[in-house]
Each structure stands twice: as structure tokens, then as C-alpha cells.
Image 1 (cartoon, rainbow over the protein chains, first blue to last red):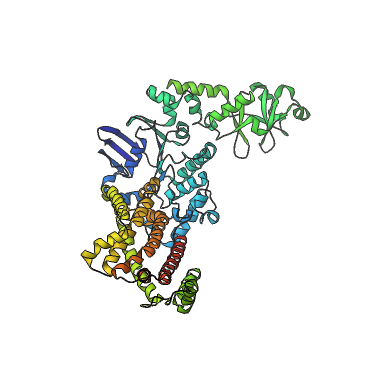
Image 2 (image 1 turned 90 degrees about the vertical axis):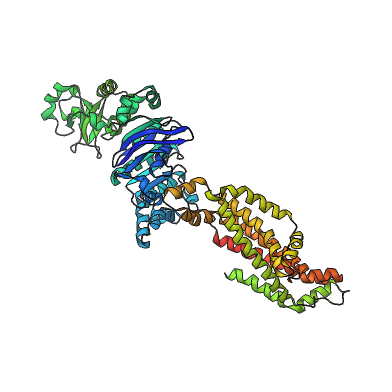
Amino acid sequence: MIELINVSKKYGDIFAVKDISMTIGKAEICVLIGPSGCGKSTTLKMINRMVEPSSGDILIDNESVAELKPELLRRRIGYVIQSIGLFPHMTVGENIAVVPRLLKWEKSRVAARVDELLELVKLDALKYREKYPSELSGGEAQRVGVARALAADPPILLMDEPFGAVDPLNRERLQYEFVKIQKALNKTVVFVTHDIDEAIRIADKIAILKAGELVQYDTPENMLAAPVNKFVHDFVGVDRALKRLSRFKVGELMRPTTSITMVNYSTSLDEMRKKGRFSWVTDVNKRLRGWAELTKISTEKELNEALTELDADLISAHVDTSLKDALSKMLEHGVKTLAVVDDDTLLIGEIRMADIVDFTDEGDSS
Amino acid sequence: MVKAVLPVLIFAAFISNMALWEGLLRFLFPREKVFLYPQANLSQLVGEHLVLVLVSSALAIIVGLSIGIFVTRPAGKDFLRIANELSSLAQTFPPVAVLALAVPLLGFGFKPTITALFTYSVLPILRNTIAGLEGVPLNTIEAASGMGMSRLQILGRIELPLALKVILAGIRISVIVNIGTATIGAVVGAGGLGSPIISGLVRDNPAFVLEGALAAALLALLADFLIGKAEQSLSWSH
């Protein structure tokens, strides 16, 4: 847990950071965001004492960082910066090994750790260990940067626009992978960005800063639903309702649904006709096959004719898809309902457009 | 290593083969009566010359590196401009003038020559040390610092290795120029390959001049080759 208590940083007469107090929970990703010069990087750098606060205190697990020797403090905190700062004269393996070596780990332990971390960030250890940073693509270098920060298994990671130099496609992939790693390893992360989409994608909590002051500190869901003022409102963007949908998964709004199987359908047919005209059709294994208009069916043969067999991809959404993507799919295919499937494309429910719309209303009124 | 040793052996064999030198100089200057500088043989002169060069260059490397490192630290930042200007100023003095100024203070012989050569060689090393260290990207240093390296560790593990190529280039230039310049030591009696040159000029014997000049040139080429090899094997190339 990281606590900032009335932290300020003054350069001359100007406050770069003014009286910020906030608590970053254990194993949370806290994103600091705001326009250029808002003090987000300065705030981040005060945590590992790259910048010394003018007043206030910062506690890590109830221990003031001011009492620790900066070098020792920093070896316990992973650090990733925008340009990654990989050391060009060291191989990927040597770069990752920097902090373990500073901590005087044994050679064999360092080597094992390097390989383990490369696998963690999805780089083949044999292939990449001996490469030099100049031989890496932007995305690969970024992965190595993350691996290096994780090397000594620090409980805290500080990341200053780490994905800033990566192209949008790779950036999104890196973000998802990073969140996965973070959840698996339970790291407390403080992450600086100016990209609101990135913040919404990865954050557990977002802190919006303006001219050195903390304007709002909240979950992305709450911030998108209820910006505290016009600045936050403008900053999160006019499409905040849509952005908010991206924070929720289909599973959260899913309704139970009924279906008929392609073989043994007749038993439940009458009952199902009462519920609606259409039904999802699955095979015996509950795997989604398509949908059928119930009024037309009374025999197995008719089912085969009535069945509109469709690529499951077109009429369904995975349970972990965001509401935003599900809505987008509905609009794209002109349907009001999507089947919800699990990892094995087995039917587990359905999601309706009306429910999503109601859900956004709820958010707005809160 | 083998590749570096071979040219040294060839050079040594060539320098010590006086019959070959005599034949060469006789062929080029058939009208002279004496072809080889009589006071000392070439190996001895090369040895004296090497001592002058090695001592003055070693001093220049130690001082140039130290000052270069000092003025690029936060504590020595204020001296950066002075260091740059002083070293440029030193270069504008002709070495003979430095020698002339040093003799009244230090007497004849070895000491004033070393002083002059040192003053002259320290500049390229200092300048390249500063340039090399300042060329290390700030974010690389920030990353190192953020990972918990101390100032000394950053200097030793990050800054110097990254600046090494530029620093070695400065040392290379300095040493090569120094080998040529060291011939002026003969003027104040410090010996070396300048002796046959001065003697040749005084006695109007071009064979002596060529003997010293050619040997100095070969020595410079050899040094260039060896430091180049060191550059290749010591500095990173990615």
C-alpha cells in the first residue's frame, strides 16, 4: 500500500504538485493521468525519490520513503520509463539481470530468473537472451523493460508512459498482457499516461490531475459515470458512456436463456413457444449452432429447415467481451440480442441491447 | 591477440635490421657519406621515444579522464566550461613554445619534454571524455538511477562503457599526434627519434632526417593499429 500525505513539490514559486493526498491499495493499478505539465510524472517520481517532495510524506506499507536510502528503496521498486531506457551495451539477459546483480544474487539464480521473466512476457528465452536492445522491435523492447522491472520481484511497479512509443495495435495487446501479469503477480502499480483509453483499459483506480492538483480519484466506472466537474467531464471525452461500457463484461448483464438441441427438442418445444418466437439452437453438447423460428417447428425435419445455421461468431459474444464490443457487434449485424458463450463456444446465456441501454442510463443518473 | 602481436613483431624486426636501413638510405641518398645516425642505433632511439610517449600519454590519459569525469558530475558542473576552454587553449600553444617555457623551469632533458607532450596530448582525451559522457542519453541514466544504481555504479557500469568508444577515439588521436610531436624532445636533449632528425638538419644530411621520420611514422601507424584493435574489442558495437 502506498500513501501520499499532503505531498507538494515546488520549483521556485511554482507548484508542480500541490497538496496531493491519496492511498493506492495493494495489488491495484492506479493510473495518474492529466494534460502535460499536470504533475503526474513528478508525483510518480516522488514515490521512488527520483524527485524529493518539498513537503508532505509518502509511506509504503506505513514506512516513510524519506527514511530509506534512495538506492535501496529503488531496488525494491520496479521502474519502467517511456523510452524504456534499456542499456544498449548490455544484452537483453544482462539488462534484466541488473537489479538482481545489484542485490548480489547468485549467478545461477539470476540466470534462472532471466529465463523465467522472458517466458512471462512471452519472449523465447533462448532466442532473446543474447540479443542486444538495438535488435528488438518497439514492442519487444517494451516487454523486456517490463521484465527488467519485475526482475527482483518488487511489490511495487512505477511506470511512466511505458507504452507511449509502441504502435496502437501492439499497445493494446501489451496493455492486456500487462494487466494479466499484474493480476497474476499481485503487484501494486502506479502508472502514468496521458491516454484516457489506456487508463480506462487497465486502471483499477484513476487519478486525474490538473496543474499539480488532484481533481478526482476514483474507479474508472465511477469516473465515467459521474465526473466531478467540467474538466474531468471533458477529459474523459464525449463518448464516456461508451467508454464506460468497455469497463463491464457481457457476463455481468447476461440473462439466462433457453435453447433447443438439434436432436432432442420436442419435449420442451411447447413450453418454449410461450416465451418467444425464436430460440437458440445448439447441438447435443450445448455448442451453439444458430437460431430457429419456433412457430415453424414441430418435427425434427422441420427444425433442420427452420434452423438458420450461422457462424457462432456472428450471433454470439464471449462472456468476457466488453459491453461496448457486444453493443458494437449488435449494431454491426443489426440484431438486438446476442447469444453468450464460454471458452468452448457453449451457450450459457444471452445479452440484450435494451439491457445495455438501461445500464448506461443507470450509470448516468448515479 | 595473435593478429595484434604480428605487426609488433614485424615492426621490431624491421627496426632492428640496420643493414636493411643502411641499404635503403644508401639507395635514396647515394651522395651522402654516412647514412645512419651514428650516436645511437635505431632500436635504442625507438626505446627512448616510446618512454617519452608512454609516460606523457599515460599522464594525459589519467588527467584527461579524471577531469573529464569530474566536470560532467553534478559537483564539477561549474568547471565544465573552464575545462573545455583551457584544453582548447593548450592546443593553440605550439609544442616548441611549451618546451621553451618549460626549460627555464624544469631544466633540460626529460621533464620539460614530458610537460610539453602532456600539455599537448591531454586536450583530445579531455574533450572526447566530456563528449562521450555527455553523449550518454539522459533517460538511460535515469533508468539506471531509478533501478537503484549508485552514482559510482552508474558511472562504472553505464556511462563509461557507453562513452568508451568516443574516449578511445580521443586517446588514439592523442597518442598518434604525440608520437610525432615527441620528436621535438631532441631539441632539449630528451633523445628519441627526434635526435637523428635534428642532427640531420644541423649537418644537412637528409638520410638522418628520413631515418628518424620514417621510424616515427611507422611507430605511429603501429600505435594506430593497436589502439584501433583495443577499440574494437573493448567497446560495444550495437
